[in-house]
Image (cartoon, rainbow, N blue to C red):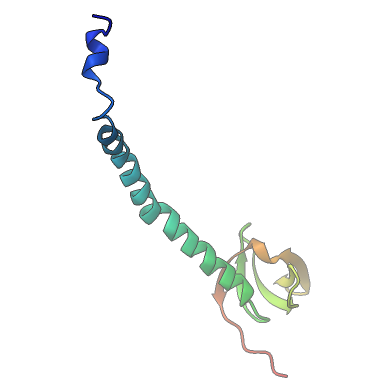
Length: 110
């Protein structure tokens, strides 16, 4: 008499399972996004960091701006490297600006 039919149909005991079933598609979408987008991107970032860390003198590199040059001076733990982009033209660039290492140079002879 005091309870409307709408409240009587939505009994509180059986509603818990409905919420879980409604969350399953969202969880499934997140798992698919993780394996198709997030995980490969993290792997690419790790590979790029390793590439930047292993740049040595004599390597031919391509910067993110498209400049191709040969590394002439590399100092450890410094964010800048010196690159020769033409004969007797040397510029300093940030390590983070390296997008590709085209050819590895000869190891430095001590």
